[in-house]
Structures are given as C-alpha cells and as structure tokens.
Length: 204
Image (cartoon, rainbow, N blue to C red):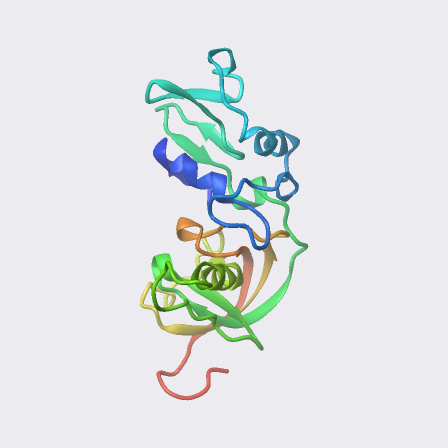
C-alpha cells in the first residue's frame, strides 16, 4: 500500500494480526518481514516513556505513542506505511485466476472455484455476529494492481471481471486493503488476461 497516513490513522496498523484475530488484538510479530518491525509488534503493549521518544516512540497530543510496525515519518511529520511486500512476509509468485470486482474501496478478488463470502446481517451486538463478521473479513482478498496498471476497462465501476495474473499473496492472514477489511492481499506482478464479464450469464 505504501500510502501516507495521518498520525491518527497510525492506530489502524495495530490491527494487523493473524487468523481469527479481532480488530483490537495486537499483531503477531511473525507476520512481518523485518526484524525491526517484529520487535515493534512485540513492544506495542509496552507504554512509552519520555526517554523512548525518538527510539520507537513519538510525541502526539501531549503524550508519547509507540511506533507501529512498518511505519515511518515523512518530512512533513505525517506517518507513512511501507509497501505490503516490504512490510509483510509474502508467498512465492504463482498464477491466479478468478473474478475481480473493482469497486474502489470495496474491491475484492474471488479465486476460481470459490464464492464470495457475504457480510452478516442483523444486529452487530447479537450473539455470534462478531465471529461471523471476522470469518467473512478473513476470507476477503484485496488485489493490488498498482504496479501493473491494468488499463482501460478496469475502471472502478463494480463490474465483475475475469482476471488471470501472476502475483504474490501475504503469507499470513491480517488486516489489508481499505480499513483493513480484507484478510489477505495479493500484489499483481503481471496480468495475463483481463476482461469484463457479461451482465448476465457465466463469466469464463
């Protein structure tokens, strides 16, 4: 992702965890590529002191905040995040085929042979709702096509598209994509096929 974040948004990075991890759980150090970020994950629950500022902590709103994994400060003082494959351990490149719904912040990739998971309805405070929500979130896959620029026909219109590509998937489940609402992310390195599905009928 590698996008600039505000200081407040840095808290969202605390949510990067492993399978069945809830949004408020601390991240598992093993998901991170660099030893530095693994150590940051281990220290997240340790309060900062004034002596820690500049050494894994920074000043914010009259207090000291611990640096989340993969974060850095740019020249303007905003917090940025390393690109996914510089932050997280990734699987080896492989060939994927399936349906891509490019709906901007709600986009997802549905691998061939699987079906899209449905978000739970009803009251979010009802028994089992949170567990159902986390199961669906963990099943969602965010597709990062920023390095290949798939071009014309891939606009954000929510239309289903058949896609085949070479890509790398995050090794461990976590919180990826927009607001961490996808359990995995795949970085597309090369597009082999991309075509819009018909509005009716089978896409293939």
